[in-house]
Image 1 (cartoon, rainbow, N blue to C red):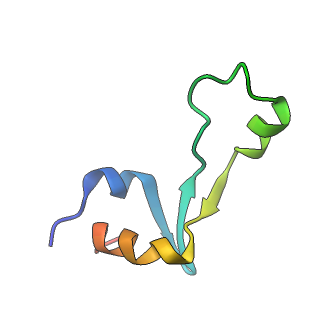
Image 2: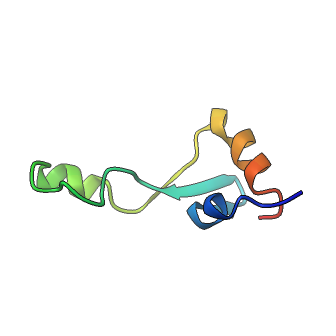
Image 3: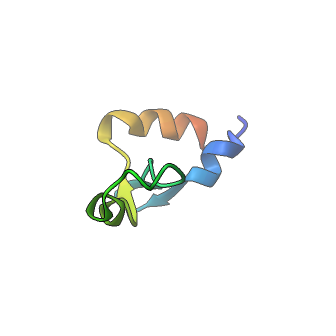
Length: 61
């Protein structure tokens, strides 16, 4: 099985699932409030319903 390279760059495996960066933080930031931008910092865990998809895309991470 091959790893989807784009997915491998976006997800990191942890002991309890996968972590990912938050979306909506790259551009068009002027209309977003400082609070919203601040809350988009850091990583979050991949939702339980999406874990199987990530595992299929990245079988070796």
